[in-house]
Amino acid sequence: MTKNHLDSIKNENLKSDIIFCLNQNEELSKIIELQKEFKVNIFSKNPDLIYNWLEKAKKLNIKEINSFVNLIESV
Image 1 (tube, one colour):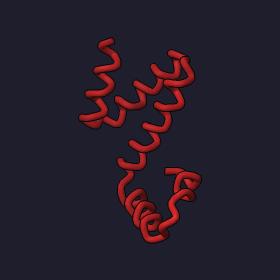
Image 2 (spheres, rainbow, N blue to C red):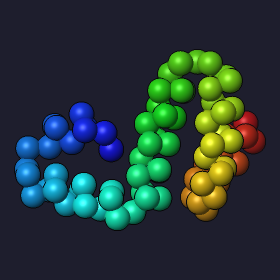
Image 3 (cartoon, rainbow, N blue to C red):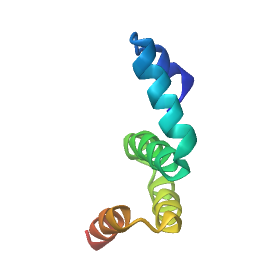
Image 4 (cartoon, rainbow, N blue to C red):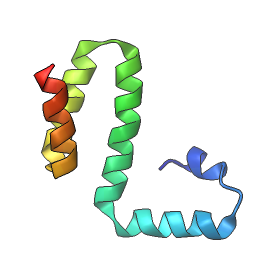
């Protein structure tokens, strides 16, 4: 989660908890970044960006993300 996203959170305790969780869980941070990239890439309508995103997503090797990638690739 980027600083800009955290700035919109007014509750300082919640913001602190989110920062703590993201710092403690690298995989969660990677998933959030991957999700943000997907949103940008899908709206770009550039197939190369989507293919690159799919490869990056596969490298995380997370069951649920792999399932999503397989669904996209099956279309």
